[in-house]
Length: 325
Image (cartoon, rainbow, N blue to C red; front, side, top):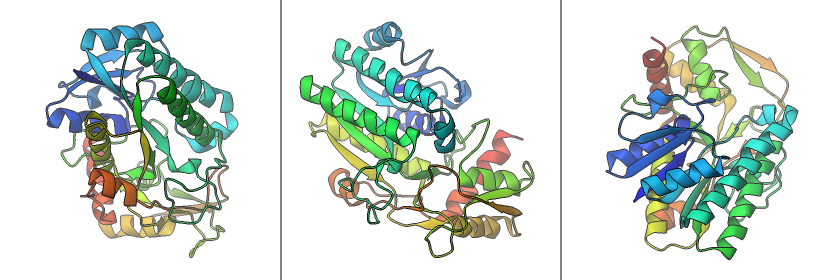
């Protein structure tokens, strides 16, 4: 049997595809290449270019490849953009995901892993955030992700499907073997942009907000290396294969770093100061997001291997040098 990875030519999806292939799983990737790149998938997975909203195509892929599990990454992910283009986000993240779910139900897919976000939680929820913390998303992006979580819950009650929801905190870094990394044409991730500044490809790093209620006034996030996150998906899949019940997991290290602390890490790695420009907050950005990873560690035995922030920065820097040389 095979695993269908939607959005598998994107950042997190491609790392998960490599992790699955590394251990011998059969993988088929479905991606429309709107933001992903075919080269990130490698040659160990079958690749289909197309839309997850195309139920006919999804049904054929499931049947032809013997898919019994789906890992769903495809979707739009930029929080400020979702504020200005909410309908596009609801279309990509809710309408298309609903169509994918319908195709999975029709084909009898019994396991589904969904990439969600820590921004579904209430802005004033106590930190660190547990899976049961109050939900109150403040951006269309986060609302669209929570809607998909609800859809999954309802589908699993009505059909023989079990799921795992993985709520990501701030994903960063690149594959230690250099096979994948962030390739977004308009980079928005802090570490990626900081590395591009370090390499002289953009003139300065914007710091969005210096008046948050945090120790140094800048936003605090739980930065998780993409390789550790990819491994979390494999563990969740194995748990579902073993009969685990549907549940959700918060994916982070349980450690918050401010924007200024990340800038300091980049400066340590490159050995010089980074030019920065301070500006107002972006719409939809909460002040602090830190995970409580107790559940994923206890239930799945997840053990992060790449938590050092300087090493995370170094991996991102190595990828950018290789990818854009």
